Image (tube, rainbow, N blue to C red; front, side, top):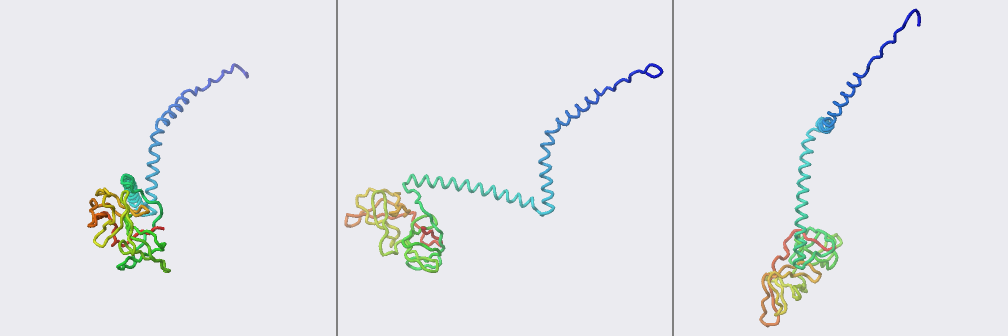
Amino acid sequence: MHGGLELARPKRRKLRWWWLVLLGMAVFLGTLPRLAAALPAGISRADEALAGFFVPRYTRRLTALQQQNAELHSRLAQAETALAENDALRSLLGCERVPGSWQPARVVRCLPQGVTLACRGAMGAAVLDPQGRWAGRVTAVYEDGTCFATLAGQAEDAEAGLAGNCAGLLDIRDGWVLTSLPADSGLAAGTVVTTPEGLWLGTLAEAPTPAADGLTAAAPLTDTADLGSTVFFVEN
């Protein structure tokens, strides 16, 4: 000490400043959820503003594309439901989907015996209409990448048709008719008729009627191929 007593200076109390700091942190933490919720919306609005500036009508186009995408997803779901129902019906009728791949072919020329198709088909390959019903077979293949399909009823040899445990022959001179069935076949209307490899020919429109000789029977078919189609499907 120099020339007398020196009193110690009182220390400043900083307690009140700590309370202010703690209060500020509490307020900040309380508003943090609101800031977090508002931040994505703000970023989204900023993105829309920038996109509208650099690409005019961007937001409108994006909205239209999103609506189209939602519509396509809805159609896809409906198509999947329809395919499931179709497979269930085929299973119920005993006409399972035939395995294999098929190529679409546009008709480029029509003749009385058949059609020229814009595809390379193999000799004897089956030809289906757009609904998957048997319509004929490939009987000629050309070097220009086309082939000729002889349609149902135009071939020299009649196509065989299987109905239940019975076999018959297809005749379409007076409409699609399955002939040469056993007279006592016992088949009923609605029986599915297929080719030997399992391709759809149609269904019996009515029970077979015995022929004049009493040994065979015949029945008209329904749900048969559209031979006037402009597109067919050829087996690969």
